[in-house]
Image (cartoon, rainbow, N blue to C red; front, side, top):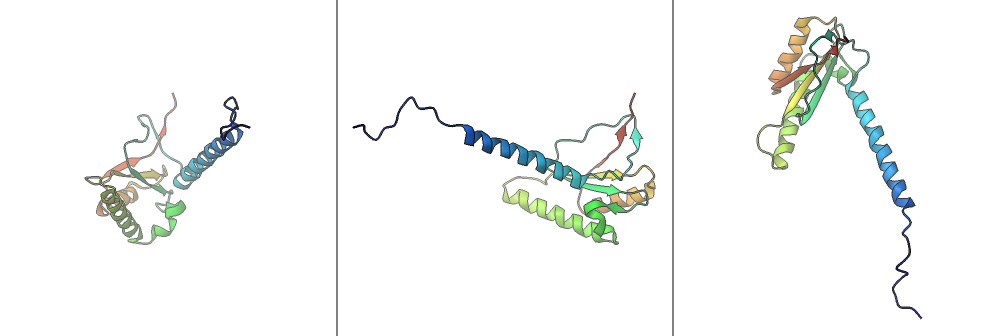
Length: 151
């Protein structure tokens, strides 16, 4: 009769572990695509710039504003087109991010970047209004998105 020990030469079955790992990989790949789709509207025809550079990676939080050719917000921010609504929303977001950073023990303001994805036909005056709204809400960093000129 053998004791409580099992066979020391037995190989563990790794199939369930590999199944779980592959399912996690698929979940994260799908989630990343959903997040990207929420922030980027394909209906915005970005301007073409010869000196376009990739997005800054050092931000802790990005706020995407998709602006159509008429100077109106699109996508998930569309309900904020009423006067003052966007500013109130951005102020609440900045306050929430600052509180979260303090609770996590971080010092200083969180690095929030307002990313303007404006249609190539939008008027500069309308873009300036969005920049000023971001400034009044407490956002200090801004980026414009453009397509890089090929060739």
